[in-house]
Amino acid sequence: MENLDPRTRQQILSIVRPKGQKHLRPWHGCPAVPRVLVGVNSRIAVWRPHPGAHAIRETALHITFFENLVANILSGEDRPAEFELQKRGSPVVVEGLTEKQWRSEKHYISAVNERLGEVVGSFDPDRLDQVASERSGITAMEYIHGIVDHTLYHTAEMDLLKTLAKRALER
Image (cartoon, one colour):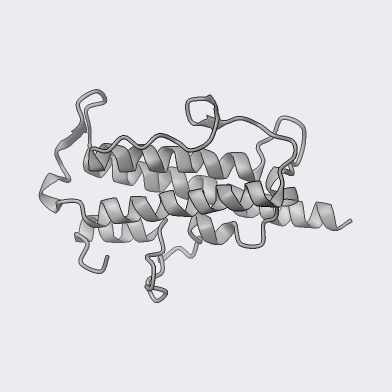
């Protein structure tokens, strides 16, 4: 991971904490998705600030869907999402969740996040400006920048939801 192309190094370190590389931190301070989920139990995971708003679980799985999609595009693999989808990129909404179910989902979320880091970390820098998907016409670099922006946006959203949920559920 430390030998990443300079154009992708800070990008991927913004959303993935490589195993055994605790000293590598993003400059902006926003934690990686698995780190935000520390301390989130199943009750907090499905809490929503108002009816119709997204819960942490939905947001985390939404991020994971797209991290998996980008990892698939860049690697040429086709690993399907390991959760039920309501529509493309959106998990089925649940009102309740057991701790066992949530632990399993968090494990999957972490595994996909780590896989994305590995795929980007091993991606050939000479191919960064090449179209990665003929269907979309988007380059590998655009996918990398896009997934980082998407993940950071929703990670900050989850961090806020975590704070709100903990306060609301403590009452």
